[in-house]
Length: 117
Image (cartoon, rainbow, N blue to C red):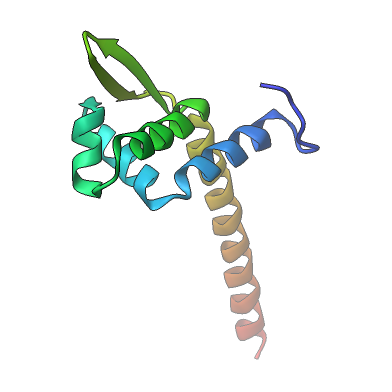
């Protein structure tokens, strides 16, 4: 992966991952794969999409590093990568910590203002 982001590799990974997850069908695929591997047919069934459309959706997830696929005979089996969302989880954790700290400081400021009056 070429680092073309002015914010660094992590932001590039986050951008690619979020773009892949932005489609409702792909998000549903990831949700399904979080329960275990599935064939392309199993993934396509609830979405009423063609085989080529499902191949494209899974391809986007593979390119983003979220899903792997392998052939077993004539069947393609897809698996969610265990570390696929590590960067997303870490970024969300940092963002949560920032907002919790900001809210705590605001509460302290408001409490101090209230105590003065």
